Length: 136
Image (cartoon, rainbow, N blue to C red; front, side, top):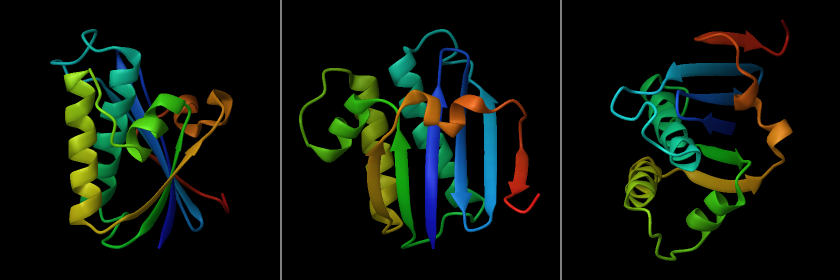
């Protein structure tokens, strides 16, 4: 199955959107207390990507060998995933390791795409635990 995945985060909350066939699932969470107001904006975006992928797998939306187009509004994030260059931020390096581990374990087919921030659907979430189909 094919999915389109968006993620966003800031110092207070994280969010993600997974589009699959005729459904769009939007999720928003407060940042975990250990990270709330303690991580940078970019670190928070990595948290959102990691948690969102993990959540999607956990609720069986994303299954083994699925293909996912991950749309990111930070060029540096795409660069980090598409190259094996060393990253100075240990926190980000650890998130990338976790994300790559999920991808490898589940044999996911991943494509990264850079998008403009205003096209990032995860930035526009207002309700938690919302499920909408494109037919609504």
